[in-house]
Amino acid sequence: MKGADAMSVEFTRSLPAAIEQLPGLLDAIQAWLEEAGVSGGDIARLMIAFDEILSNIAKYGGGRIDLAITIADGMFRATIADDGPPFDPLARPAPDTDLDIDERSIGGLGIHLVREMMDEVVYTYENGQNRLIFSKTF
Image 1 (cartoon, rainbow, N blue to C red):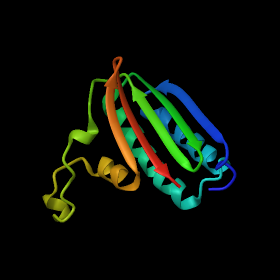
Image 2: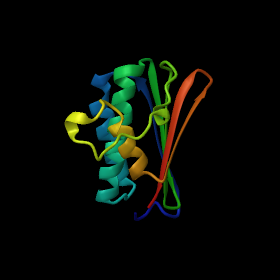
Image 3: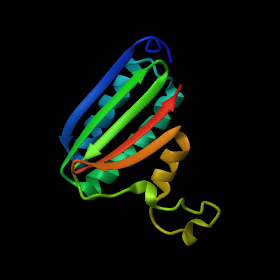
């Protein structure tokens, strides 16, 4: 990452948790990451995480999404909060990726990918909101 190492940059949005809102939000996140100097490979991994998490909230959560991303001193951190029903995606066991695709149970692969690509992923439920925080050091 260039440029953003010595300073802190932030991206925030609050919007309805609706599928039709996601393309514009994902485009804005990607453009912001590019402007912040994040490398192409890191952007690709982060965008997979954002797409997975935000899509699941829009499909199953409802309400509003509050997103805050910071990059400071080579550390990326995103907090995604929603006011949908309480749901801890980290409570699910990791999928058995050794099984044939037809033998696997449905779901869980996306959050598994997020966990594998990030340095830390934490879930909490506070003040009536699901809160998923993930971070990565560049």
